[in-house]
Image (cartoon, rainbow, N blue to C red):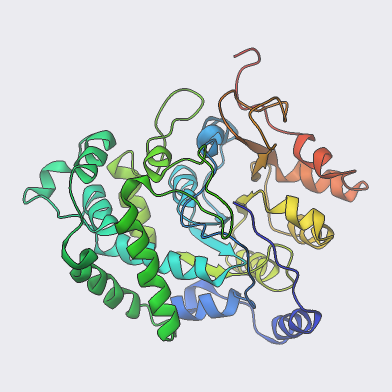
Length: 376
């Protein structure tokens, strides 16, 4: 996933002034719609649909998250549904999913509606992909994810591209209380149609560029394994699904429009965490830092990160794309185009406070947590 926005100075000044004048955002006292509005800033553009991730390595950090004891607190991440796998593993009290593109916020409303409407994992997949549910839906609750995927793969979409399902989801989205105009509603429906039309073979695509054969399908991502060879996505077991469903129903997965280097969204998320007595347990930045570095806005991001509430177990999860399958990063795993990385936030902050990083390459190799036994 690749994100970038260089915001207009006037917009940043306005957001900063609003943040200074507004009272602290309080989770216990704010509605879902109020939280979305209070934390968001002006949106930006990037040339991808980003309906799903292109990070085939995204689960490689799971064992290290367990080993470091990364749990609870407030989770912050960028992008679409790969966040749910990290959230299910970390079990935060609150999760904020932010992205520079307003479209990502709209897609998160789609996911929220799906979770709230679904009885179990198969129901979720059937609603997402507009496939008919079996009459004995409850009997599928404890089955392996591979069986659920096979079920969805074997069935054609419902009539009218799942028209009844899409209307049902649209009604649920409307119940969230977030002001959406006709274009927003059409975008959510377009995203839903994309999942229904492509099925589990859906891939990440870039506008104006040919699709890359090595990008994973959604099927690949859901069935992906960690470095121990264990499937670890958010739909692997019913317990993780129930946790996510409960968090969504409690309005504690909050989609936000924001630039990681912006002057409003991420700082305001930090203030909300302090107000709620929470540490930021994990910040999933994907490969956004690469673009921030190129746009010369990384310094602003780094200053914000050093001020986020943290503890010794807090981490930054990032992705590195080396441009090929060769040894472009010391921790790259053979056969994977992307490399997933983990750094403790205290180490990031210490380096920054002592003079910072020499380059993007220095950033992605400095203090990287070992994800697998040496020599494996």
